[in-house]
Length: 180
Image (tube, rainbow, N blue to C red; front, side, top):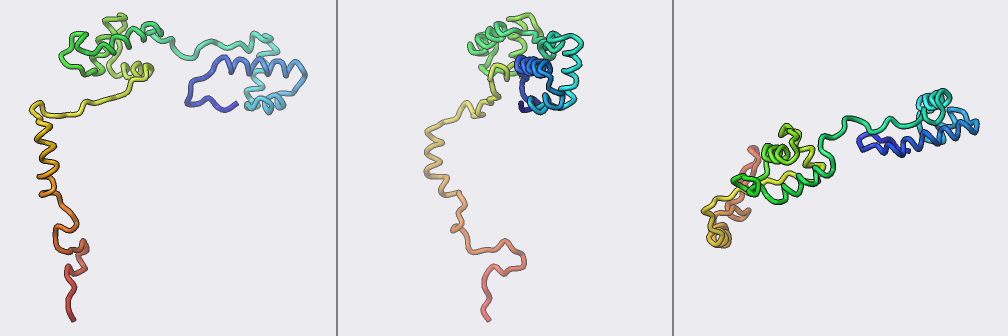
């Protein structure tokens, strides 16, 4: 079994692997043989063997989930996502821009749980939300005038390779060939 570093651990699969080791020990396989067969270290097989011998199969049972339990369950996260999809103005904000402090405020209103704005990003990632920044444009922007300038005015001011005389970027080379 490949390493689980950097990814979520499948705790049930890990427990099933330990139970499989118990069956192999019961059949009389050595710790080294079990380690090779299951693709684990000899140290892991050694620990499993002694836990199995001391307490039987319950000694190999998993401890449960790893780490602290989340403060928001799936239902609460779903409520938060529905609220975010309504847009920021629906929750009393002046613009339609979601910032981390605004999301933290909405989460506190909906669930009663307070999160630091820096931690809210982890919750948004769990909801598959990504960072998106609005394009900065002037309110007075005239799209028709911009399009017209791009088609006519831009050509006049744009630098092209043929616009100037021949030149060289080297300080040691002469810009124009000299005659003998």
